[in-house]
Length: 217
Image 1 (tube, rainbow, N blue to C red):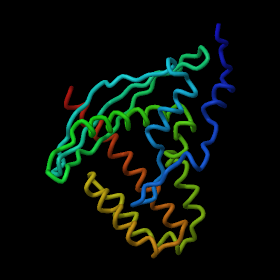
Image 2: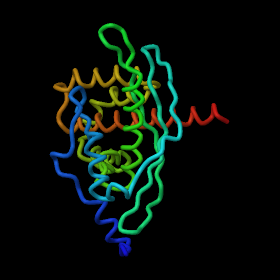
Image 3: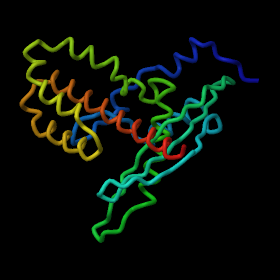
């Protein structure tokens, strides 16, 4: 019979820090992320192949003028050494891309949205699933404290523009602007802007989820 883990021990298993080689960075904006295959492999290693799973609760296509995206709501369950963890639910997105011949890659977009949803749900279990990569509420004040008053004033116009982002297209445009002007700022300023962009990106996903739920009601 499997033994139950003490709360502290359970937390220790899931909150072990990732190694630098586990974390990837997007080329166009430097934002950190975990690869889908790594997250799935990590779940198998920690929980066992039969110790976790997920269910797709809903998948919806949302048009954005460029083919659209799929949004999938996913619920993840897991058990560790006899301890049933609280199921986690989150939303993932998958952009619909086209081949050179104009054929929309629907299946790949749906799969990407589900994988993204699983990743986002699993992260709630701890650092081993990327929780530390999304702690914007904690990270932003810490980074800002390292900026001088003049350094803060220099990026105020950029932060103001980021906070006015209303949709995915606005986000992509702003990411490109920040990326193209990275040499105009120091490392700490760029790190702060990267986290603000990440915060806005997460808020857009949450808003899309809320909008979808309201339509159902």
